[in-house]
Length: 341
Image (cartoon, rainbow, N blue to C red; front, side, top):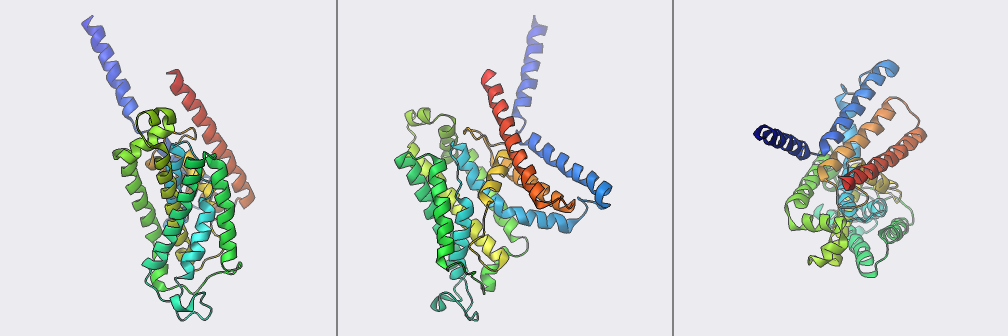
């Protein structure tokens, strides 16, 4: 009998150790698998190595850093059971507005000649602040009027894109100061992404903000009964998502050293894809920033790998859509398995 008890205890310990394994491990293994597939295909079809090219990998990470910044905010929204379709348009809007006050006095066609050569903190703060306002509007519409998140953020998506086109009548904004452009040069976009990811990883795992976010996504009625001000917290979550989209807009303009109304198109779908691939459940209550970071890198590896193999861009979009659907299907079956257990 003691042996049976000991065996049961051992089994429980082993089961507990399995349960304690980070859920991101499977996602990380998928990342390694995809990278190895591209490596093999690279030698077979192109005659080159995919992984042993530091320049290609650096460009890949830089390209997904902006998507990653957005995805950190989108992850928190989806954990609450919501969705944010406006982030790409907010990127375009904030890029245009922040760039308009980041122009150098040497540029002959400055939009605001009296507001040239401003310290970089001014356009950066303006872009982040406008993104924050857009997020607050989303949150207020969802929390106070009970409009479905899909509709509220869809409205913001259309409005923000319209503002970005109206702001300069469709004309690009160029001649930005070197101080402003600095945030988009070199490895800085990646640093910004990783710092943002670290901050909100800690916030979600170790603070009351994170506990409330997960509680609302898991069961909004139970969260309300337990004393959580659901409406106020939802506004906070969407405000953070908007703020990060604004920051992404600033980084996008600084990277390109110009701003155009079409910036950020489809970024919201890439951010949602990175979030879902990273293991965040669209039903709410489940997700981690670390998974989103890996999901973002997977998205970057896929895009870079397709380009490396000279796959047509149209096929890239088709495959990306299939992968998003597949990730959601896997999540649905995973949720069913949890309910049965």
